[in-house]
Image 1 (cartoon, rainbow, N blue to C red):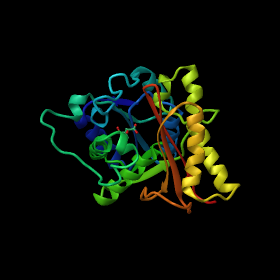
Image 2: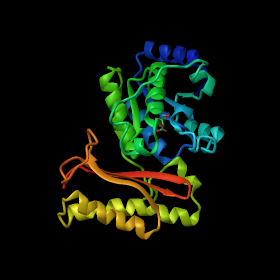
Image 3: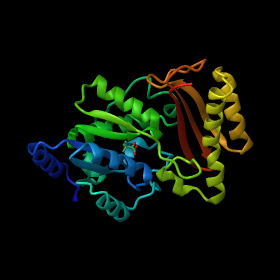
Amino acid sequence: MKILKKINDVRSEIKMAKAEGKIIGFVPTMGYLHQGHISLIRKAKEECEYVVVSIFVNPTQFGPKEDFNRYPRNLERDIKILKDEKVNLLFAPETEEMYKEGFKSWVYVEELSEILEGKFRPGHFKGVCTVVLKLFNIVQPDKAYFGWKDAQQLIIIKKMVEDLNIPVEIIGCPTIRESDGLACSSRNVYLGEKEREKALCLYKALKKIEELIKKEKIYDCKVLIKEGEKIIKEEGVELQYLEIVKIDNLKKLEKIEKDAIILGAIKIGDVRLIDNLIISEF
Ligand code: PAF
């Protein structure tokens, strides 16, 4: 596996791979890799002849009071995982390589960036879209892989790609969960044993809502959300939002319809976790 830190070096490698007619698959990450990332890499390996992974903890997507400084990092451990997965190229730039002095250009997807996560993390998606577009311009992938765990991020990136005619296919991959259902996230390492147990309440709330839809045929979103909220409140956990929206445009639903998604965010101490469940059929 090639490990590169400079944009120009990545461009040269990609040029050679493209000249050989290889399909380029790309998995952008912030490192501290877990089973969720590995599933994206494996999907990319299945579908592409040349797989690039980036590791870059992007400062512009963190708010001033968020966890940028303490975000878990372990490049050595990540490199071992990527080598085992037979990734072709790791791009691991320094901040100065991605954001030169005087950086002034931003990408912003209106409306979709202001709701749900955007309400609690103003500016977050502007940072995400900007760095993802930069990474696309550097790696020039044919296909890029993102997890449904960050559903709003995936939907916003799809919109950016469509609106700006970016020549890449965005592939959404299923959320990977630990054996008890907790969604894999690099931030799970922040959780102590007790907090880890409490954190499960969001998944339990999502599953309860799914059960009420599928078994009890309850389709009124207000009623469903109330039931979900109950589970989270009983656990004494701070609920930031729990909403049922249409999957393609994130518009709030009053009644369950096909392709709905239930999205939630909780805070345990200063650890913020998100999760979601897609209701394709009911
Ligand atoms: O999902 C993430 O890890 C990040 O938001 C991403 C897409 C790598 C951009 O920094």
